[in-house]
Image 1 (cartoon, one colour):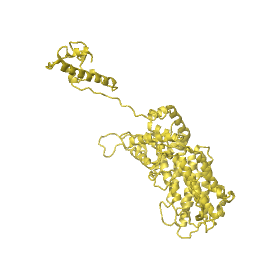
Image 2 (cartoon, rainbow, N blue to C red):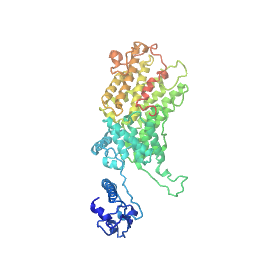
Image 3 (cartoon, one colour):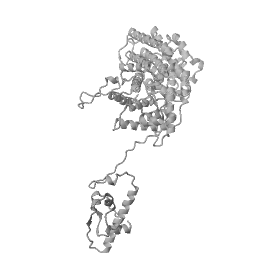
Image 4 (cartoon, rainbow, N blue to C red):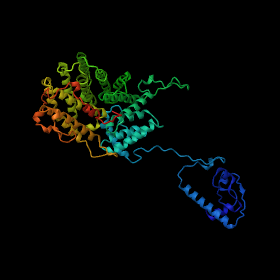
Length: 589
């Protein structure tokens, strides 16, 4: 404090602060030695000072006290100068009220504010989602006119989920954004953040490409969160049938209709499709049961299609419903020994339904990759249920009946078609596959190995040799491995984990090892295989035998391979290996 200010404070023998400023707890400043203080003069108030007590102590004590006060006020001046808090105007403060400080809440920083991505990079990722990923998830459509800036402003969580899915070429950054998605989910679902339809769309995108998530993946947990939103918002029923006024509500509000139109219909259809198709293959109970409203929504979208994919949704749901009916005949619903006649009738009924479905399809099956992969997966699932899921009534049950050979041929044909489709795709196109697509491919690899080994039965081989030779599974597995290897990078995330394709390659090599080791049984029993064979090694076992001996996979003697088809794999190791095809861990798919 300057000497002039100190003189002005004490020149009239009164205390330093007037009574008005003292009550308001505000510094009292006088620009002139006498008269009112600056604040009272500005507010036109009577400025009164309490007479000060004269100090009885000597001058040295008074000077010391003044210096301490000056030091404290100087420190206060520096702190006030550094403060960035907004304060209300002094003119609006009542004399008897303390000074209040208000702050304007700022929106939380997103990945662009924090510098993880630029808006330009986000725009490119959004375009990649629309062009590359969206055909494999037609349940969340981003219009062509949408920009990264508008999506970031209007649907920030969906925006974040899309960026995360589209970062498949940058695994470390993708895993970093995945953590941001987890924080956003916990904020809106566990803490006090808003839960909206946009949250549902973001969860669907996040689930669709969950194969890219860090392990353990939480498919089941995220799916149940999404279903809870569908239930709370009553999206599983038509808008006119939703009751927003509950039976225990006394506020007298009128019922209100809230709907997000076509967007909500697509999203609900998508959750059913993912839940049903994945749970069926991995032998889990579907969390989302079919409801007639789903088919009604599909018909509405097809009749008023905004996008070409809207015309395919009805066929996707109808095919999945057909697949669900096959589950009734599987061992998931009965552990009793099967009746051969009943099983044959079940097979023929479902086979007829599949043939009729394909004949009535209003467009070529190849128009939709989703539908093509799903159709051949359903064919394979019918073979799995018919040939492997049931215990025979007799210990020496015969497996060369005409309908079983027919089912085996159906499975070999479906496996070849699906795997040929995969290896014939343009390079790197499979990076856009959704999670269900990879589960379907894993199931196809698993069952193809089973079918070819079963077809080696001496009594069945003559009826299937043309199909096993056309499939040429050893070569097919090698081609699949080569495609996967082209996608593997040396990148690691913050926890030291590799990308998902590194793990896919390991599983394919283990399948190849299992299959090739049984091919060797033509010349020696399985138990006599060399101990040096390692399923995780990069060397293909197919080099152990001349190629001409492997092609076609000739018959296996009954002495070398004595099995009952349902007990083809007495150890669950093989099935467990591919039940973990997407490495979800024990708490997820």
